[in-house]
Length: 282
Image (cartoon, rainbow, N blue to C red; front, side):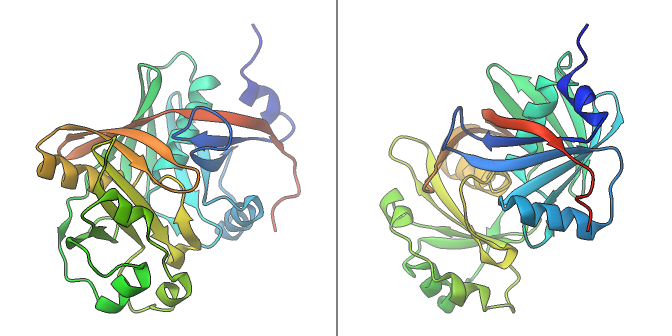
């Protein structure tokens, strides 16, 4: 029997994949790099490689046992506690290779134990819910976001995100944030800002901005659905929702709220696979 691709590659280097998450082909969704390591090197090496790739997130996996992995996520600037699209990308790579015979894998992270499952033609991520709370946002922040006329603002305490809810999807699409102005506000408690509204063709639309993490606009943000899902589920009185992230690349997802968890489903497309040769550590 031919060994999985990851086993072949690990003899000379480390397996690496480039994956479009929440997409089924080229030029859509959110691209993540996925690297499978035998051991984690110093954080400075992981950050340097994430910066070299230049994607909004790079996921670094370490195999623990059969179907069980440690996962860490790095932007080009910092390590983050949770990332949805890079987890979806990682699950796609594992299910295509060394976890090909498994229905579910377990991923240990800074945000606790996560799971990824096969679900029809999708991959389902099992994440902890982040229940948003009412929050009075700074007027200057809303001005820098591009439209101060929001319907309401909330705060997601687990992931530390501001949520700006607008009356229509047109309001969300029209936003032109001043990222220099936002990133200059180092006094704020936010990791990012999610702008959202009811959708015309989906239950809701969203965009996500994180200039404090080196990501002006994220193409598709799986982790944001841990708080947007519960918000829209309560507001629309629906446990299962369809969503669209209205970035330049765009991405679709399905969200099921089953408190205290949120199930996020989407596709992922591997467009490049290879190996990371020795010598990349700084």
